[in-house]
Length: 172
Image (cartoon, rainbow, N blue to C red):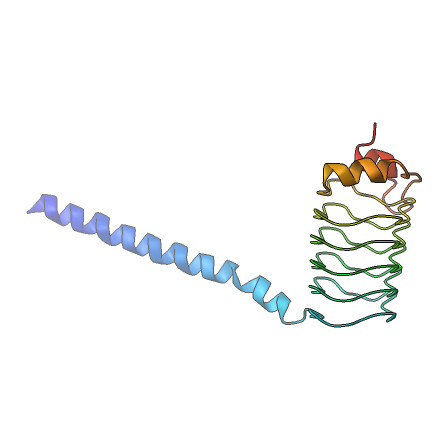
């Protein structure tokens, strides 16, 4: 009898521990949900030639948005989601795109002068004829082919981070 009583206590403690961990997990997961309530969502919209300069767009969602010629100069876009977005000829001068998700984005002829792209995911994106003078790509995820092409025209130092564009891309 004492052996089964000990086993019952162990099971009870295990159940209580599991419930406590589940509650902790739920409480820790609540913060991102609150932050998303304030997130701007422009998914699947046409924002051509709009002016978002110097705006706070932290965590903004621009999935599959048309943003041709849009002005994001000086905008704070930390953690923004730009997946499948079209930024053809957009002005991102001095924009902060740190940790942004820019998978399959068209940056064709975009102005990324002095932009901060630290830790951004930019895989399968198009950077043809984009101005990247002074842009900081430190720890960004970029396809090797794109890095090779970007290194051909990489120059300058980012005035905010002090990072050399060529070094941030890992150019040789």
